[in-house]
Length: 115
Length: 114
Image 1 (cartoon, rainbow over the protein chains, first blue to last red):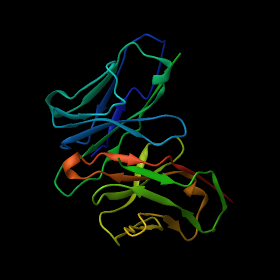
Image 2: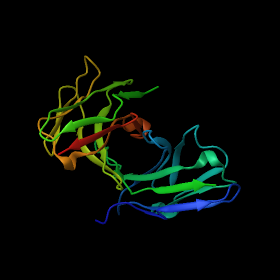
Image 3: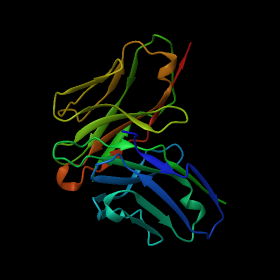
Image 4: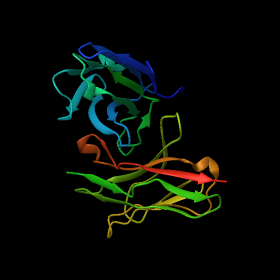
């Protein structure tokens, strides 16, 4: 069990560019979550998947954001036409999804800086 | 909607001092409650959890009791070490039917001085 991994760890981009982040959950974890954390704040929920199905998206997730989880394994989060307000730490977490087991395990995050 | 409120930091303590971080929540139903810790340069780690009223979660000398009557989940440690310097987040889970999404408080930075 290698834990949740995220790539890249840091991304610097110019406003208007597209970026894509990847998350690899703990193997056999059915649920995968994305959160966003801005400086000095707690993480905020963005979206989550049960296997390959995206079950919920937060109002925080504008149309410029899209997430996928093909084949129910890794997930990608894409931000199109980035804005300075998108600068944040993007966190991925996974859980087993088994009934009665709600603990989420977090990856190290991808820090996005939009210039 | 759900919300979590925790005391603002930073909290500065001397080694071996007693630590308390207050956390209160608002939620429908019976959420599970968590404390996560974020050490400098690292990701969020689960510190402890409690799933029902009067449960006590404990780990690494930290404890928190799920108090439904006061909607609180205060974190305590009797004798802190320099290595406990970190940011602590209180969180609740919105339940199985809603996907167990986490709602976090704003975090409390703790600095322990030798």
